[in-house]
Image: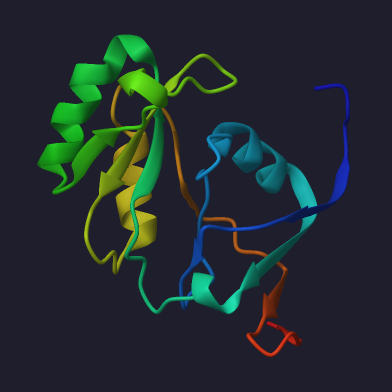
Length: 151
């Protein structure tokens, strides 16, 4: 919070769709990652070929204030999603570095990620959605042969 300018952010992604939108947050730091990516002058993403899909088809992490847990679950279901509370050993909720919880939400195949993430962010108690709308400036795609291509 003391840095006024971020020139470049280098990061990975959980999934990248054909429009270069990202799903991030598999490690649980989606709020801080989105703040950094949104603040950077340039974003560089590195991912192996298995992370690239036409349309998103994995769960979307949603960071939620614990007080809003039931409200958010209800609204996610209204959007057609199946929210699953992220847990650690013995079934305890995973707690983010910001003291929030995460729902991993299954929406099936996501053809309109920009619309979906805006609807998710309108839900009272949602802190952040794992669908990142800031598109990377450069993507390094690592292929199975050990070589990479720049997208």
